[in-house]
Image (cartoon, rainbow, N blue to C red; front, side, top):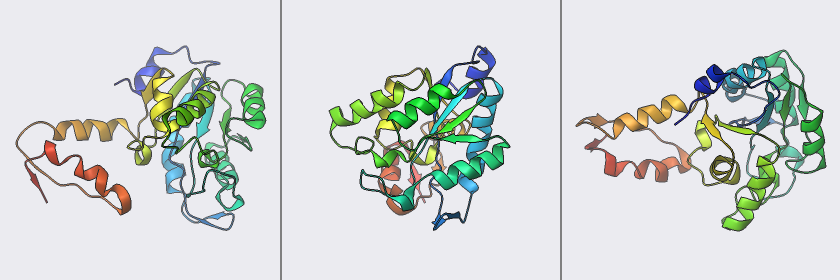
Length: 217
């Protein structure tokens, strides 16, 4: 498993377009972000890539739109807050893979950051149809040269921006994912008592770990 740290050590990122799958699913009260913790957590990977001269193309979802645009789920407020945290303007594309996304990415230069509109505004992101999901992933992948998976809260999902893009582009895992993967890998070895926490619909994910453990508390 190649990590972002290794990618950065290799250098040669200047001008390379890097698609970063982040977890920016923050709570909103209208257009006001009430907790920006996930945005703050995503900054280190984005900042490191920008500092290395990459064109950083960030993609994420917010809420549960039904495969079509809904104003209340727009990532526009997130783009503004991300720019404040980076102390650098973030260019916001008003679609995911359409004319705005293409033009915004093409206009970006080394060190610039682009945020695409909510991935779930496109039905291909969460489609159960392999061909539809793959087609959307190919459109996303066409915007970049490399892929970084840095949203641990979504890595278990078989979705276009998580599962399929990673099979199209050369891929690495960011700093929010690699420690968690290392921890889960450790759980697969040794006779230990494992403690797992979950919430909401993550129970099914946790259940898949049962075969790896000796005791579950």
